[in-house]
Length: 112
Image (cartoon, rainbow, N blue to C red; front, side):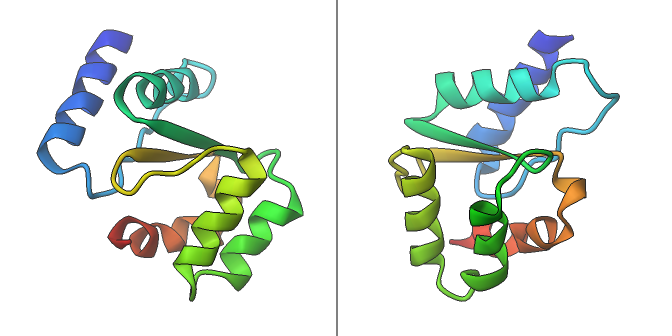
């Protein structure tokens, strides 16, 4: 099952990695784990934002900095201590349903 999901993610990246990918399914089956493994293996860098635990410093970015995506990505990079590379980094939103502003922002973040 995990291999099949990983292969689908790889195909997504090769075909059109400039769109968002939603991984949906039952809880506690390894979706976050496989997404992290994909980020580690297929990208120069990745950041996992878990909205179940995200501090105000992160959620505030979605409120105050979506009009300045350069600053948004800079603050995100600094907070997590991860260098982001244009089109070579992956940002994973875990439990995004808990923070609707982040889900609404996906379209703008993917375009940049």
